[in-house]
Image (cartoon, rainbow, N blue to C red):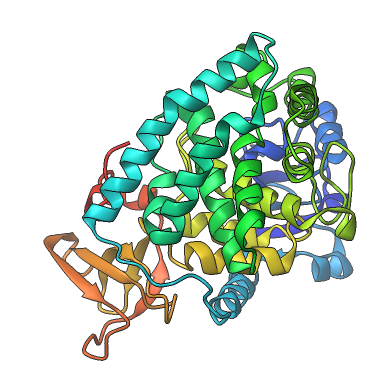
Length: 412
């Protein structure tokens, strides 16, 4: 049985099924393994991991009835997550509903492509030790902000379509777009939105001076390498201070976007109200884009699956900020794979601002006949549509490689 346990219940002989957190939070390359080594045991307990999943059918179980009370089954966690996401969906929607057609997606993709050389140039200057002028990004941030406010769904949908070799640069653009959209949902306006966007653009500047063999390593990081990677917020903060043009919000998000509300983050282990609203926003946007993106060493999670996993990571994010983020990207983000009550599989093509639980989809596969069908566009929120969402599905379980194309998303 798959169970979630606090790390203080972990012991040698248990089969680790998954860590509660993104792969950026721990140095382990594999998430499934038998815990046999004292060294690995200590790395887990000292590495900031608070909870993890074990598979009691492959290794030792938790001890005794009292311990079992603290161990939670995957089914119970899934039910709790769905309740939380449905609550988030009930929040008022701050963004105006925009046209989400192919033209909007094409414009968003073009903006991303134009952004790559600008961000690459800035990171190149940082790697050479040149002072970074935060003001050089303001025009690009303004353009991204305008695009988000015109068509929030388009730019956010395109945000995860990155080539693996351009991840570092495109991640900056994606987090910028997500910060603007989330800020609008939280009620930020004008200059505050611009500051949020600029902070998102520059939050990972410190990675420009990380050793490339560590940054792009296709395997498990050593403890020393993991410590090097965890220094990037402070390195970026130092470079922005030296540049002299970065405002307080940009500096704060750069330094604190890896802090967690339970105090288990880095570099300063801040907790609760010690972390600013902007840094809490940066934490959510950074993690979501990272775990949904294809990396040189890891494929990204499905958007819907990513949200559900993030909802399980208690203590990582400010609940109000995470709920607003869910409202921003949707319970079922564009590109998510859904099973409908009819037995059809469908990919999400657009959000329904009035009801995030009933998106627009394109059905393309019948689970009853186990074969592809002629693609059928459906608005699950329409009074004329009798079909509803039954569950989320993992594309990997079905070996579907063309969901982005079916969703109408352009190539990166």
